[in-house]
Structures are given as structure tokens and as C-alpha cells.
Length: 413
Image (cartoon, rainbow, N blue to C red; front, side, top):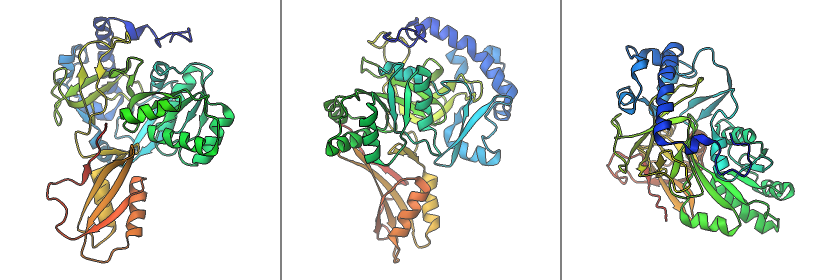
């Protein structure tokens, strides 16, 4: 890590030649594969017969099987709590639960999720006071960015979610300089400050994730004096890629190997073609190999104008399956089935995701010919997904016969 607080780069890895980066990554990969085979029950089976010393290139890596995020729920149920994917002998400090449910481990090493690099690129430095509005409850979002900020030497206010008025008062009283959270809540927080007449001028930078950041919302937030950057992160993997001052795609983190593959396969796609994001994680505690995120993106041609030389992604471009991120939380088709099962008399369900004034909306449409208490259904939706939704009852046969249970109708402009 750079010791110069004004340095544009977190460390020299960000500006090394692409050839040297590939050499370093694929020199480390055989040891990682051997470690996974020796210490995890899952990879002992999944990579049986694989010679780690032969996996020294992207071509060789592409020959290994894919580990799918969509399979984690079943794997963990069969072999709790982590499906045999956590390395024996490695210390785990916390366990989290994301919707699914899926359980994620946090290793004990500092900056475990590698968020410090993304925060540095967004202008965060030692001494900054960071208002962290990602959730600290159940899911690891709050801890991911708390961990990275403290690794940079920042002071963190663990705001979490909710209590908007109290959060606004704390932001003003503490003279907070940076924000982490969803862009939608940042807008809500700043609007609350304005409504209450609170001074938010100290807040000048933000690193956001979990929701889309359309140009109109970025511009609105800039009008409040906040320079907003994005990070692409997941609960399983931590930070995968991050935005820089170039505002031209997201630069892949130095601690992961990213592939873009044809959805449903492990076959790599050429630069510029949209496909599923696969990540190999160079982590001792959680050695995920060719982990299929279910997210769609593409590789942008050439290095970033900011000087960083790693691969660039276009950012989040949708889901390879119907699992959908709404207000920063994933909603799975299995959860829709759980809602139906909880209420006899409902025949079919469809979650419709929309956007109003750059805020995510969720409507659950349900086919039924019976009298159903929509308040009880809404409570079930909240319990299962951790999200509030509008409930609409429709006549049998009204919903499209297209196999969709989650229909994402959001457009970003």
C-alpha cells in the first residue's frame, strides 16, 4: 500500500504491465488450487485428478469446472455451514447470512474483502470519517466497507440502515467526509439534511454499491457536492472491480482473476461480448475457483485512462438467471416459491421490479380466485426477502405464460 496519502494509486500493482500481472497471478494460482484441494472437501472432489502445476494460464483455468453461486444454498444445506468450501485450519471471524439463505465467512486477515483499494480510488484517505450506511445486520455489506475503510486508516461511523433523521443529524454533527452505502440512500440522507437545515458540506466523496447509479442520479448527487464512485462487490467475493477517476468502466481488483463466459457454461468470451462474470479468489480462507456470480458484464478494450492497467469491466449489466438485486438485496426465484407455499389459494406469482425517480420498486402480482389478506402476504414477502413490496391480486390466467417469476423492468438513463 502507498504511504503517500496523496498518491493516485493504492500500490504499484495497479500500474504494472499486464504481462507482469498475468505472470504473478498465474504463478500464484497453482498453489491456490493445491491449497483448495488439500483443505476443502468441496474442491477435493470437484478438482479430483487436476494437477495444480498445470494450471498456469487462462486457457488451462478455463478447463476447470465452474462453482455456481446458485448452487450454494443446496451445498450448504447438505454440508453446513459452508458447503465444504472453507479451508480447514484457516481462522473465520464472522459468519453472515444473505437471502437464499446463503452463509458467507469472513476471514481474520485485515482488508479481507479488499475494499481498501476501491475506497482509495474513490479518494478516501487516512483520517477521513466515513459514514457507512450498508447493513451490519445478517449480511456482510457493512463489514466489507468498514473493514476496508479502517485498513486505510479511516474512522468509521457504523450507521447501518434506517433511522434516516438520526443518520442525518450524526452526519452533520460529526462533519463526516465520506459515505459508503447505496446511492439511493445517499440521496435520501442528503434530502433529509436539506429538509432539516443540517450542514452536509463536509461530505464530499462516496463509494456506492448494491444499486445502479444512472447518470441522472450521479448528477443529482454531485449537485449536493458529493463526488460519487461505484464498486462492484458481492457478499461471497468482496470487491471485484471499482471505478476510478477516469469514469470509464470498472477496474478489476488485483486480488482476483476474472473471466467473462457464455452464460450457463464455463466457455470464455472475447473482449466486448456480454457474458457471465466468473471470479477466482486468491484467498486462503475461502478459496473460490471459477465462481459464477450470475452477473452479466463485458470486458472493455484497452487500459483505463487513469493509468491503471488491469482488465476493465463495463459494470453490472443484468443477471444471467432470474435472481435479481433490488434495493441492494438479491431476490431469488426460490423465495417467490416460498411465498406461494405460505399462502394456500395463490396459484402463480410474479415479482415485477421497476424504478421511480431512481429508486427501486417491487410489486408482487399474484393470481388467485379467492379472498386473500394482502397484508399477510406483504408480511410474508418482507420476512422472506427482507424487502417491502406492493401486493396486487389478479385473476387466474392474467400473468404471462413465459416462465418468468421475477421480471426486471428497470431502465437506466
